Length: 264
Image 1 (cartoon, rainbow, N blue to C red):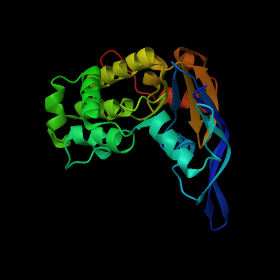
Image 2 (image 1 turned 135 degrees about the horizontal axis):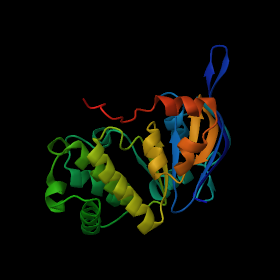
Image 3 (image 1 turned 135 degrees about the vertical axis):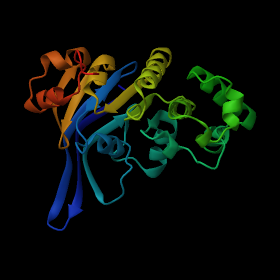
């Protein structure tokens, strides 16, 4: 199992005692799986990822267990945390522009991690990035590597960020609202890239989204998060048909749908 989260809790110190944020979150992601985590804004989706990767400081009190490819994260020393974050996992966030240095060329941003963190020779890192840019659907990769982020569209930049995430051959990817800022056509293209990489590389992906229709269409399983607690877990293709929890049903009823004449 690539990701095993068991009874994960998170709280922060408050004036009147600990403030609970996550309450007993449990979920798994295995190789070749795309698992969804859905809920409204503020439900704790991104917080779950940050807690799993131990990205909060000492002000956070964590409980339970998080194992990434067998490595327990909650009790890991700093060196182990750095290794797991650098080698075994990758995080793709919603805003690709925030993930790239605006004053550096795209190629420099992508190769730097391979050279400085993983010790790859510069020429090898360059070749790896060029091949990955092609794999995620960008034409003229050499030209793209010489461009700055502002010279690319949002869809192109999201492909760049995915290429960067894949460059270190992680086994597990956290996709945090990675397609929500894209138009529908670009979103479909990016999702297809992710699905192809899952098939070809045997990746596991935890896909965080507020879009229930998207989660139902692409995820093997979907976990519904409310106020830091998973209230329902369902097969993706049965999300709309089998949901019984009132919160899940409320999310489904609030999800926009296309009806005849709605575009008039």
